[in-house]
Length: 241
Image: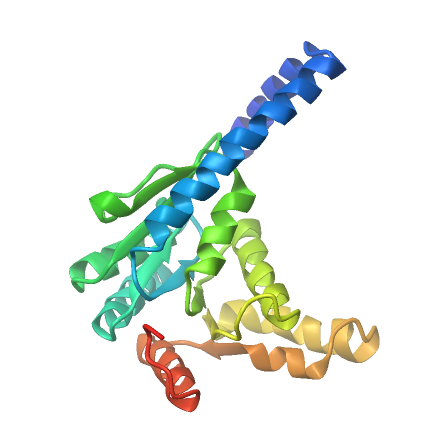
């Protein structure tokens, strides 16, 4: 069903593009700059006031009665009790679990929503003054990275992988600080990391062995908080450095 919805939306987009001339497309692109600028300004002004936060990534398709939803909720609760706020994509699934845990823990609960053809709708556990909406994925990703002091990555799909590798790349290239990247669910993530180590690093030499040191794999909420706390103790920082 989800694929059929995506296919229908894609067809509508293609039809709209066919109806436009090149000059119309170019003009629309030029005016889009102002929309992009407004999203950056609104995002910067809103996010600068939230305080120290950890981003939680994961699938929008995860159901409330599944183990990873319940685990994400526990992780967010523990994170909020440790003094961090929680940032999610604002939608259902793992994102809802993250906001719910932060809300129940009395912590800051931020949602960065994106308009999508299907799946995305904001969840009810976001703080009313911290529910932001975006049209552009790249603007939204800047907010995730710029205002996070750690990344917790739950099992997810292509969007989750996109967010994970974005964070790794920016840290690897020293475009942002070296914040903890925590993968939750060794059963889910071990195959990917085995491939990275055996093929990407050892066989093809497309990455350095030390790059894997950027990533920690855990299975419990206590381990997530331990990784975050150890990181900040090691560098003599507090969550609000």
